[in-house]
Length: 84
Image 1 (spheres, one colour):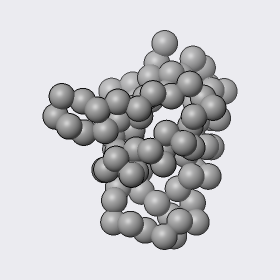
Image 2 (cartoon, helix red, strand yellow):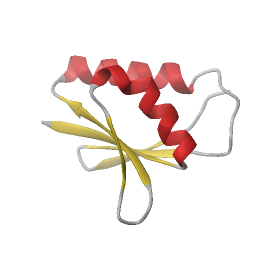
Image 3 (spheres, rainbow, N blue to C red):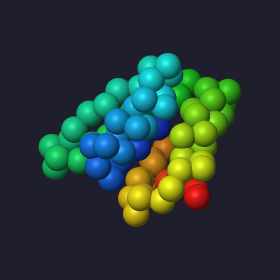
Image 4 (cartoon, helix red, strand yellow):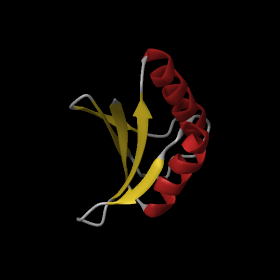
């Protein structure tokens, strides 16, 4: 199974992502470097679309906080930032 990982810029940011994805089986973790990660299992394209839709709803329309987060899937990294 694939896992989508969000490396949040802060604990506040990680909790926001966790809350946005809480109905999708996500986990909030702190890695050995002290960074916060939210991990979501992805078992198909439909699930990926659902997760990305939830992330889009979470990040759209919020005021920019100067914090971008890193999203990782299938060995590729993407910058996830809020849209004003």
